[in-house]
Image 1 (cartoon, rainbow, N blue to C red):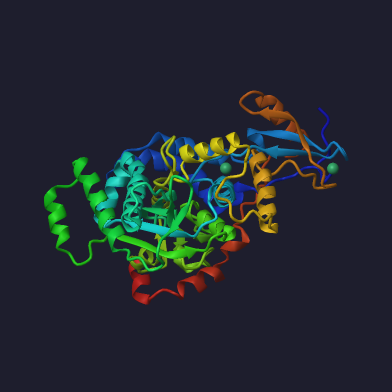
Image 2: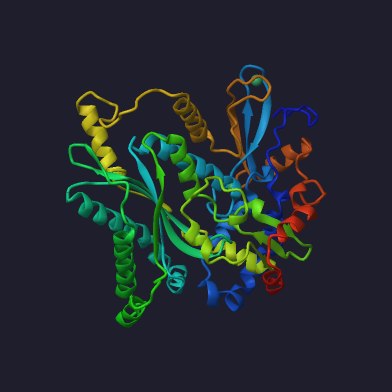
Length: 465
Ligand SMILES: [Zn+2]
Ligand SMILES: [Zn+2]
C-alpha cells in the first residue's frame, strides 16, 4: 500500500481526544473505579452495569488511528487521508454524542415537526423519588410515556375532543446542572392538536399549568405505587405539603415555522449530560473542578429550566476522580434504551400512515404543509443533514481538504482484523506514537478557574472544600 509521507499535508489528523482532561482522567482512573465500585459506590449508584465498561472502553478508542481507520482518496487530485473510526457511544464520548445531537435536532426540526406552534414542556419530580429511577432503569424507561399521557389528557379536555392528537417528542434527561442525578422529561409538543382529518386546533395562549401538574403528579404516584416503591401513606402525606416537589413548566413557546428555534431546543433537549467545557481543571491527582451549566452561556436562553436551577446553591463542584467517574457514568443509558421518543402525531405509526396516504393520492408532500417555501435555512438543513448521515467516521471524510471534491473510502483497516497491518502502516507514516507531551490544553489555565470561583459565596466555597 502506498502511503504519503508524514510531512505531506496528506494526513488528516483528527481531534486528539487523548489530550482532553476527560480522556486522561478516564484512562488513568477507570479500572480503579470499576474495582472499588461495589464497596464505594454501589450503595449510592446501584449495581454495576456492564454497559459502563463497554461504553468507556469504546470511548477510549474513539478516533484513535491505532484502533483502525478508513483510507479515503480524492478521485480528482489523488489526495489521501486516514480517518479514524468513531465510537458512537452516547453520554460518555462528547464528540460522538454531539454528532448524534445534531442529527436528531436537524431531523426533528426539518423532517418531523409540523409547521404549527410548539411549546417546550419540562416535567420534574421530587428529590425523594429520583433515586428509584437510578436503581431501576426500567422505571426511567416508563417516564416519557407518562409525560405524553399527561399532555394528551389535558389537551383533549381543554379542546373537548377525544379524537384530537398532539405531536410530542420527549427526551429523557437524567442529569441536572452539575451532572447530578435528576431524571426529568424535556418535551417538544405541538401547542394544539390534530383532528383525524389533519386539521390543527390551536390551544389558547393562556393555559394554566395546574392541570398538567396534577395529572403528572398522579401518574408518577401511580407508577411508584404500582411498582411497590411507595405506599398510599406517602402519597397522602405529600398531598398535605404546600410544595410537592413536582413541576411542569411550559413557558417556552416557539412560533409556527421557527425551524431554527426547534433545532436549538431539540439540541438542548438531547445534549450530553456533561460537557468538556465545564471541566475547569483536573489536578495531578485527578481532583476535578466542574462548573454548573447555569454558569455558562446558555445555548438557548429561556429554557424553562429555572425550576431545575432553584435547588442548586453553588455553581461548581469538586470531585475526586472516582466520584467524578461515578457521576458521569451513571448517565450512560442501558443498551437499547431510547432516550428520545415520538408520540401521537409525531409517532412513527402516524407519520407512516400519513406518508402512505400521501403516496396513494400521488401527493408525496405531507398534507398539512403550510409553508413550503424553500428558505435558505431549509436548504442549509438539508445539506447538513445529508452530510451528517454520511458521517459514519471520525470526521466527514467526503470533502477533500485540498480541492473540495468528494472523497471516496478505498479501504478499511481495523485492528481487530489486521493488527499487524495497522501497526506497520502507522509506524511507517510516523503516526503510531502519541505525542509524549501531556500538557493540559489552553482552556484549563488557572486564571479561568480564579475567575470562576469569584462567583461563589465564601461560605459555600469553604463548605465545598
Ligand atoms: Zn466517540
Ligand atoms: Zn482533491
